Amino acid sequence: MPKVPINTPIMDKEEAEVVQKIMSERYFTDQSYEGGKYVREFEAALESYLSVKHVVAVSSGTAALIAALYAAKIEPGDEVILPSLTFVATANAVKAVGARPVFADIDNFYTIDTKEIRKKINKRVKAIMPVHLYGHVANMDEILEIAEEYNITVIEDAAQSLGSSFKGKMSGTLSKMGCFSFYPGKVMTTGEGGAVATNDDELADSLRKIRNHGFDNKGNIDGFGLNLRMPQINAAIGTVQLKRLPQFLIAREKNAFTYLKYLIDLSDKITLPPIREGAKYNWYLFTILHPNRQKAIEALKNAEIDARVYYDPPVHKTPAYNYGGPLPKTEMISKTTLSLPVNPLVNEDIIQKVTEILKESLN
Image (cartoon, rainbow, N blue to C red):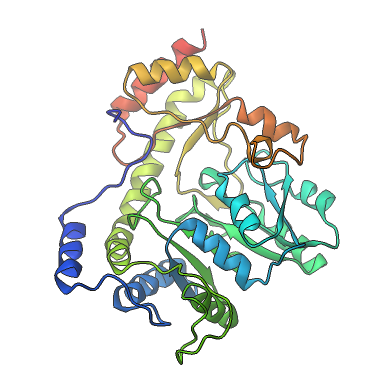
């Protein structure tokens, strides 16, 4: 493992203690509609953090997307508009419910371009799935305006944006449903897990049934469902991590603005992260565009600094999909994007070192 990872879970004795507690209780899962004690505690804590009425915890970020699509009644033959510059799970979730992903190009903030959404709309389109990529919040005002005009559901893929906000509202709460991931590489973790946030009572009820084989709160099978439950251990870890999240985000923001300070002199050669007006980022990733990316990656790797490419190829260029292009901006950015470590383990000395390496790689 590199000395400076791109992202890594940050845990302490409190997480270990809750794991030991649940192991001693032998309380690993709960098939109840409500989700069990530790799941309910985690959901309540996340509801409070997000200022949202309902959070339904599930087994992964992908499970969150699939559950949200089922709750929105997306069916075979339907189409869902989404960006291609995203982790493949966004498209896979659409495919999993039998619908067809329709890929749109991105704007200058690495998020779905609203002009492109309008070009892709037809009578088969039943949902738009904006991705808040790298923690950058999509242009939700215009997306919601389009959705209302065409009576289309919006489901936010907020897997990378927990803690980001737009005009004072948390990402993942800006539409009917927002989907989060708590994979170990995210800004906080449950070990593995996800959640769907909503202010809609009916959708919350559907989501709770979908995650548990269709069982309602009376124990009757009331429709289709899967086993998408979050284990009790994961939920308990999440409750502890959520307490730490504000400090994690403060550290990330400090590191991001330190990068901006050091890299401003290179801004004629590299593209620094854009900041959308009205948005506050969680700085999940500090992503630049670098004209000589491979040289930079190799030099950083030699210094044991983990820098990553997210994502090359974009989804519409992968063998699993391979349709929907051309998407000029997506394709250009996928060839130059480079994400630098900005997690709480990073400090100013590391950022100075990264800056020196980037300067050399531009020669």
